[in-house]
Length: 376
Length: 119
Image (cartoon, rainbow over all chains, first blue to last red; front, side, top):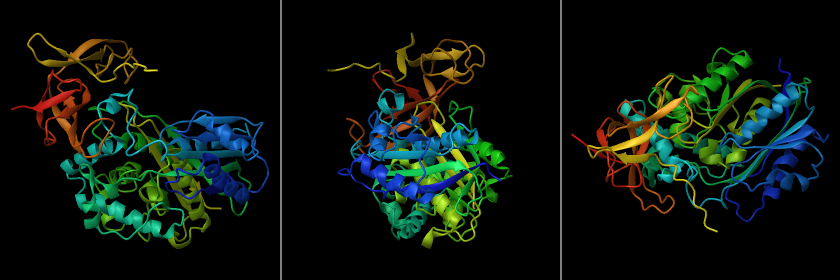
């Protein structure tokens, strides 16, 4: 039995919307979440965002009449939205606040012309490494170790784009073949364009409160948040593996689960195809070295033993950094309520959200959040 | 207003034998090698002393960047290199990415950390 529950969720549409202001994006998410949860006011707000200008939280909240309450803005790279969620849950669990709004909002289309690069105050950014190249390093290493094949990398993109056909909020969807994915433009060897998440704008929100046993409440069984350890030759793993494995272990223990295989539906951080493969292995959803095969053989597809990213994931839904974690959460809430339409995982009772944000040089990720949720 | 920021890249120095070294620090408590002049050990928080690493190492992984990043002209190759008894550093490579496991040596004539294949 959970002490804390998600009472409502909402999201904007995801896509390139340089002409849409952040107020509108945020309102689309918050108004849906509040309508879903019931109209009572919130006692506090946590906002996750990465590239928005200073003051963005109050700037969007004032426009919807959410004033005179504590507002805290958090930045944890791609895990900013889930960090806002984790902090909101803890504030409710400890009784600090009764009803908390978590909001993630991001407009990438006005901030980046192409791939994200780490800050140029970081060695990686100053040396010309873009984020696709950082993930490409992991993919090259996996190929070298025989832990994945190019076709298996592409299979993740094929799967997630097909999943998104059933998600009307997704930025992209489509029926691609492995050959088409591999033939798309090379971005950073071996990752091709269709193996990279798009530039996206969007917002997502959740209302968190005490669990009361309501018929639409999705229980929060466990949440964990970690920053990364130094990453180098001490670890045998690729970048981002250890932080996910350790955070997942914390969250599964908090949820009273033995293993990720006890979970029915999963949303993970697939900013690039290799990211989903590494993450499914780090979570323990599949054995080490089996993540690529799991995508290729349908194990992680809708209808498979361990469905991963039924929403289409970051690859297809889109990846507005601060909003992503709460968009993942919204998908799992819909799945656990049985409201996911054509992408519904039948009978899903336990769901898991994983977001990993990185870019700071020499660290195995800036932050990872893993949350375990249960159906009403 | 033009603001000059500190260059965050590993500092390459030339040793008396003419080869390149990364000028960083090493932890006095856990021996962690660090490519930067940080005030404490990132692994354990222990005290550090100045240390130099290189010139040789092994390619841990590599890629070729085929999109423009800042003012750089693609394509260009990058590798994570594990310097012998030293830290993992991001470095540029000549032309194409060499195979994982290739032996490489730091160059001394570029502002970016840059390695070339040896042997």
